[in-house]
Amino acid sequence: MRAVLQRVSRAKVSVNGETVGEIGKGILVLLGIASVDTEKDAIYLLEKTLNVRIFEDASEKMNLSLLDIKGELLVVSQFTLYGDTRKGRRPSFIEAAPPEKANSLYELFVSEARRQIKTVQTGRFQAMMDVELVNDGPVTILLDDKKLF
Image 1: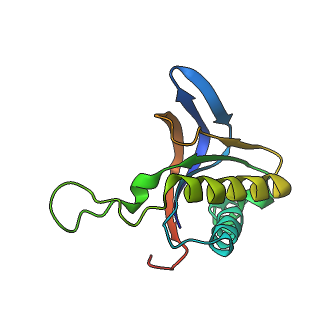
Image 2 (image 1 turned 120 degrees about the vertical axis):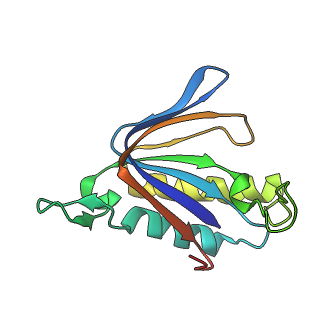
């Protein structure tokens, strides 16, 4: 499982011109799920996401987590995080989970997040989405459950 975390002052996701998820200060998560991922991987990545210290404290040091600031979370499924371009020019998505499995783990990630923080918004699984964000910093963090980076 992979995630791109973007610290945002605001973000929203739309489908066919309709806003389906929108947050203020918090984290936009682009979430990719591999065919080998498990529920344990989803929980691990969620805990990392909620606890990574990427928000500034009073001394302007990145020392606070999303939980600390009571921030908001926008989770968008993005299978293209498993696009492999090492061979040829067209990405291969062979490592990405099939839709049924990916949706199940995506929903687990979201439901567990909702247990821990007040505002959790989502995109729409398997839809063509427009994602808008104001990246605060900019701060962008890459997470991988296999600790590849």
